[in-house]
Amino acid sequence: MRVFVLLFNPRTENEGIHTLRIGDRNTILMFESEDDATRYALLLEAQDFASPTPEALDSEEIEEFCRDAGYDSKLIHEGELAIPPETNLEELEWQPEGPDTEDDLPSSELDRIRRQLEGLL
Image: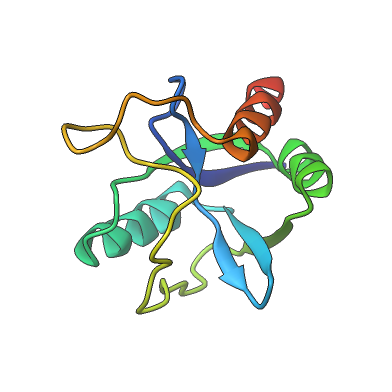
């Protein structure tokens, strides 16, 4: 099944995927509807979060990525209201591209996640 996930800087060396921290686990939201994913992305932007892009991927690929990365996934059915939490992590494992970011190599964790995401595409 095709789902939409939120990616930051898609198809770049600094690609990241939006996750929610639930307890001690990261969870990737998989939206059935591109419109719902876009609405969620706009809500994130309204909270001064980096601007994510909805990207269509196969749900089985995302679930496999989650298993490999030790993440959880959650399917958001079409029309189901998903609202981002009011607070965001202070320290991100991924950094947005832009004038305020450093050109240093990303952490080993980001490298691992990037390799897994590249394998999905």
